[in-house]
Amino acid sequence: MTERDTTRRRFLKASAATVATAALPATATAAESGWTVAETPTGNTLYDAEYAADGAYAVGAGGVGLERTSEGWKKIFDGGVTGNGNSLYGADVTDDGERVWFVGSSGAVGEYDVTTGTLYNHSKPVGSTNNFNDVSVTGQAGEANVYVAGDSGKIFYSFENGASQTWDYVTPGSGAGLSAIDFHDARSGHVVDTNQKVFQTTDGVSYTNIGIANANVNFYGVDSDATDDVWVSGGGGMVFHWDGANWTPTDLGDAGLRDIEVTDDDAEALTVGGGGKVFDLSAGKWTQDATPTGQNLKAVVRGDVNVAVGAGGTIVEN
Image (cartoon, rainbow, N blue to C red):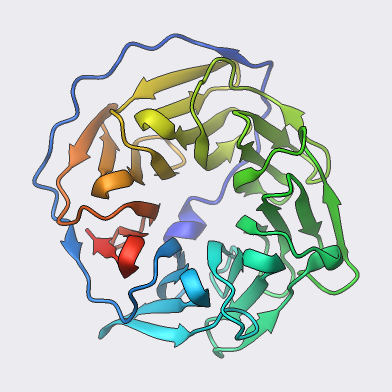
């Protein structure tokens, strides 16, 4: 069973949004954490990473795609979905781990079959050539629900595996760009925008604003575990947790935190950001992990080996 399988989200019901005041945690100290730098075949910035059935994958600038193999990280494609070099900013994996989906600049949407090595092009849904920042998929390979979020403030969605003519779109908020999206069930999930808003859906079509009031930072990452269990990472080292009634903020310092990954039971988490920063949640306490890089980290994924990716083709593993 893959890490993605074990952390696939469950549906619960939430109530109205408020913000709770949280005391700052104890100072995050560097730990002997075991993070090491992996050799990679690219110098391009890597923007996202995911675990599929056969291991970890990463995507990045110039449309590069990498796979973690027994012999290290290998390039599996370059130039993006169509070979024209559109950068890839977000990725996700079907529930069975058989397909990796990714999105990026100029309306790029792609699907990679990890078994056959086939790359499918689903670009420009509804004719859109906007920059897409993130994607979330639910369901099995070939039958997935696909949700794409981007700079236009629209979520493009298909309930038929991205087939042509099956796409539609919705604008959850005021049209501000959407930074990240994550679903915990077939049609239930959350998206964050650049206007300090978090939106929730339980049908994959309509969205409700659930905060975050007075956040005062940009939102970069979201982990949706249930309608009453949502984590958001943002600027200024801020992490926010929604329990169905309140948002609880935690201040981890000054690094912009670009991504966050949390287990379903909230027992463990990782968040990463600027200057090679990695913070590790365990036993209810956040700790800063020592890392061997000062490069800005863009994404993190948990698995048998935890993987974080970032600028300059950087990959660190634990």
